[in-house]
Length: 216
Image 1 (spheres, rainbow, N blue to C red):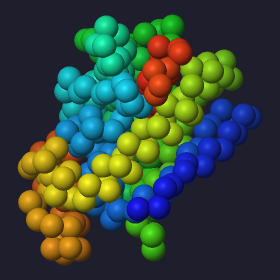
Image 2 (image 1 turned 90 degrees about the vertical axis):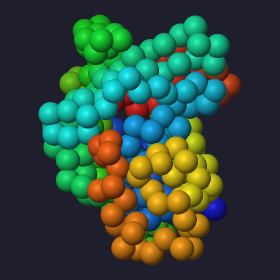
Image 3 (image 1 turned 60 degrees about the vertical axis):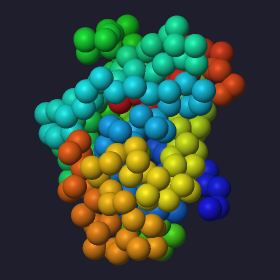
Image 4 (image 1 turned 90 degrees about the horizontal axis):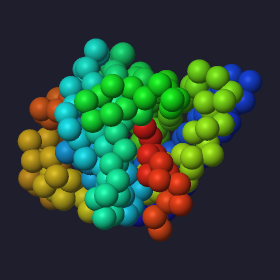
């Protein structure tokens, strides 16, 4: 599998950060990896941190509550994602925030407004993430926390997961993907993956928040 790198574009006047990333995997599989809690926990955090989902209700009006856990488990940084709009295998709009274990937002930390877009391409799938910030200060804060580095590492984790082939991902989300070899999975089966999922639902960072690649 060819190593991919994300493209980051900073639009300071509009307070937006755009990230474009290609994946050597079919659209239904990529969609599942971004929307199934069992798979998200496998790649969302930059190593050696890990993500742990407390609950996820992937639907408009639903919420994903998760935390980033340090390698020694002494630090747990909580985040929540509130879903506003979902178009299966096309796009997701949501609001992300730092919060406590119960999901109460931290008013001292910036919110992030996410628009994730998924598009099938000749190489596999292109994911475009547009993140809008409330103001210049919030934009600068997230960048200084190491968001770009952390998110890049998380996306590389997803590449690694895809390289293990669908039958390996199925072990992480047993209800979502049939236990077959990748060559045996026809396109029509891959197209049904998102519908089958019940949830569809670094060196250690010097800044403890660096392990929060995508906040919600």
